[in-house]
Length: 602
Image (tube, rainbow, N blue to C red; front, side):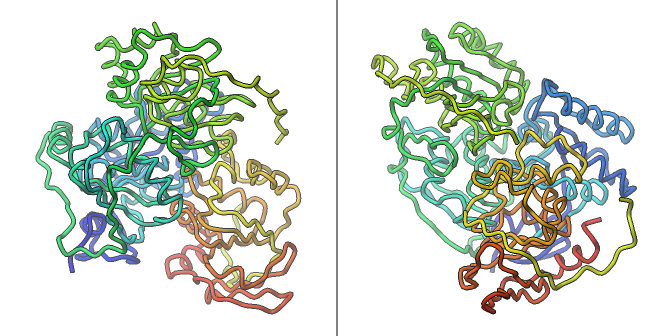
């Protein structure tokens, strides 16, 4: 039987002749990247464990999360990375360069068939060129910097084929929002998606990047789009050599094969709180806005900038509305300057910033405030991700048109006139928020008090908000645990050592931040049991020797808050001590047990 694209790439970068789902391989990594907020923690791991650097020429820092250094803690972390880079001869793509995942493509660090990891959870954006990119936590990155390799479990693959012609006004952002609405945040959890179809084959690199960038929001490991000749030529020009494409075999096996009809695609907008809560533009038209953001790794490319300029030409941003525009890289910024797009943006009263993640990471161009309504071309609108207001996700064209109109609309309806709006409500008042010892064998049997959190898709911003990401001392992390999860803001002050959390599907969705695991360790939480976990979160927990188990039969335990639950991580057996009901969860794998008993990846 043949192999899928992801199976071939992972086999090519390991000692395996054949890779199949569930295989755990030791994978060589071509590009090993740390960003500014995660970089300092990578450095700390390297220094604390007295590790070396395997290959400085394949090791990089990218400062894109807060590339203005407007936050003192970010600035301190960036400087820690610069000092470390000088010491080891590591290249730094500093605050003037732009989004790291895009730079990997621009600079030829990654190419079709290559492997890359980053502290950026959207490293799977590299699927746009048929490469394997994966966001990982700081422990994984440090291990790869030291050894050049990292363990990885081969995911199942899903084949999506788009048939027919995509409607003329449907953008790449509309396509991925449609897919999110159709499949949700966890249908493809932990799987690799391959995207095919005649219309997909014709997509430009910029459009492919938009689509691939939001595989993370679908819960997928990656979304791989086989490169067309335009993409191949571009990548060959960046690495100055020919590329041998890695394509799926005709007899490759897929967990699912799904066909979609292109004519069903339409202009989409995601409602605040969940990227997958996307609905047709017509259903949300007329909603008043206060601000708009255009940029991020999803929509900061030159094609996006040109589309925005076309909308803004001869228009002004509405009174009392702020429009922020941020190209994704310095190269794109300079193209905007050369083509006269910056002048169009400024004439329209937009604010233009230096390249970087910008509004998506609530960084260089600021956040939105309580009660503020924002239309964003970013990839996430989790509560608190871009500030304390509401964030709608949409294409750059819709965001620009909405900024001009003052309400959510499409470019062709800007002249439709003023829509009467109710006076805005008053904004809500925000709520305020040892030395190493010899390793002992860790227990395989745990018993703890149950915290029952019956919710799906709890993301890492809800678990550990990005405003605390600059904290590197694990002892300080615990007090911020679940501080952004509605109804559980006071969790940290009531949690007790040994507690066990029971929750739903896709726990830990979102970013690659290790702190979303370490905060529970800081509090002494003994275990988290969920129906399923976000792929990156699962790795981070395993690497930190933090016990997690998955089961889709948790309801059979009839658990209540305060119940005592007995857990055997070796067998996977769970017993509710109150009613003696038991089920079988997925036990630790051999790798998970080895790392657990080792006290962590190091």
